[in-house]
Length: 195
Image (cartoon, rainbow, N blue to C red; front, side):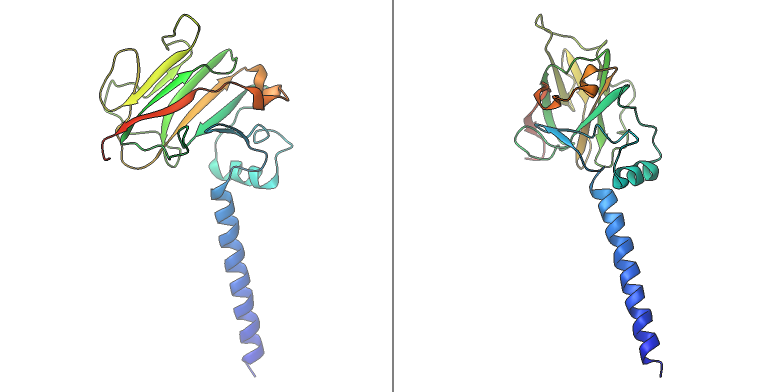
């Protein structure tokens, strides 16, 4: 007598549970479709626009962050180096080269979840286009390490994985159809404390 209602209730519970779990997993796994990948750097140019896909819109709503419009700028993230190895907070890296043209850019290191790193007082945790020392050809080298070094240096000494976030403000690249031709800075691992 209660067999059929119990089976229906069990089926609905499983369906709703698996549906909620898969939606949550999908939103955590991606920022949406339409990613542009340039070496280790990834950007979602449609993420900030009205034409973003439903997953990107849900991800944006869940994050609670104000994003740049496509005409305002573009955000690239990197979670691996040039060889594809995950960026570790216990390793040293060098970021070298140039950025795509932009009126202003910032580079910062975040933890694996995209949050700000807990750094000691008065140590640099980011750079921007105004504070970065450059070579005569306009290229730069930024070292990420636990020990201070001359030139461009960002403190990096934290457990777990980290990500790099390069934000281009007022860049013509955001409206360009040929983003795959942009020159992005290289990320090279120098060494690791735990290896």
